[in-house]
Structures are given as C-alpha cells and as structure tokens.
Image (cartoon, rainbow, N blue to C red; front, side, top):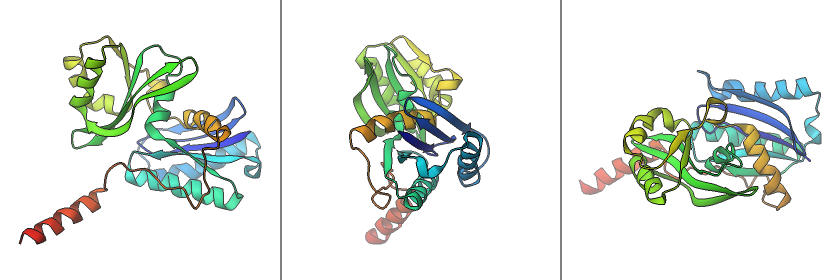
Length: 238
C-alpha cells in the first residue's frame, strides 16, 4: 500500500510518502512561507527524489482539521485535486489525532495544543493502549485554562505538544499540578508522516471517501463568518 500524505493545517507544511510500513520520504517546513508556495513543490520533490509514480499510490491522506482556515483549504484543495486527477480516494485524518500520534507508545496522557487565538486552543486528550491510540476526549476548541484544569483533574502525568505550547507554556508551568513535560522539537509539531501512518489504518478499515465528498473540519466559523454574524446581529438590534 502506498499513501501520499499532506498536512497544512497549522504553521507547518508537511508532505510524506508511505509504502506499507515504511516512511519512504517526508518533507516538513516550519518557516515564513505560505502553504500555497510550499506544498506542491514539496510533493514534487518527494516524487522526484524517490522516483515514484503518483499513479501508483492507493490514496491521498490529508489532515482534515481543525486548524488554520487558509491552511485547511489549501490542504483540502491539494488533496482533492490530486485524488481527482489520479482517481484515488481521500483519507481525512483529524488534525489533533495525528498530532497526538507523534507520541506513539507513551504511557503518559497526551494533550495536543494548537493555538486557535482569542485565548483558545484546538485540543483533545489521548492515551495509548498497546498499539492503539485511544481518544479520551475528541478534538475540540477550548479555552486554554480549561484544558489545564481538565488535565489536573485527570491526575495522570502528561505530555503537551503543538504550537500552542509556545503561547501557553508559561501558564501551564504555573497552573499544572501533575507531572508534565513538553514534547521535543522533532515530535512537537504536525508531521505528514503521522497523518500517513494513521491513514494506513483508516484505509484498511474502509474509512475513506471520494475526492468530491471530502471537506475540511473547521470546528468554528471563520473570522469573516463571525464578523458577518456580528453585523447582522447589530442590524437586528437596530
């Protein structure tokens, strides 16, 4: 089985190619460029360096959200375009689940934190039972302080990861009441390799869809939608 995986849900742009249980190639960039500038060239470089034919892949996997609205749209458009051109299915992988999967096998609670701004994070709670990722709390948008309170109530040692750590790390250090750590740099951000590894499992379970059916998961309205709702609400009061 061959899976082409992409993740542009956050600050990181990442693409990977997996063949069975082998991560053949992964190209990840966390720098000041837009995903529209980086994602397709990264995929092209992977194909060129590995001398693969995209027609040979079985599916295109993509981090389906939540995350940056622009990043999710770019990722979805890229995945759908490739899948349509190649006549392959799309495997949508929840962004926060894939981030948690970076820490495969840990005995600690896993708490991803993706900065959603406005004092909020995209998050979830996970643990591993053998080789299975167990979702204790599904991905959601939440106030960062509430997440720390929830972890404290759980009582288990925890690992935090994601770009939200840079924003809320100080608060975590002050408020956390259980043993904790922050994931090291090579495991702390989104990776297409993790998206692809989960996608292999999902594909085997029949959890995929056509390119036309795939859609990003935002979890909250975009800024433009919120502003429009506020304008309409103001007009209604007038």
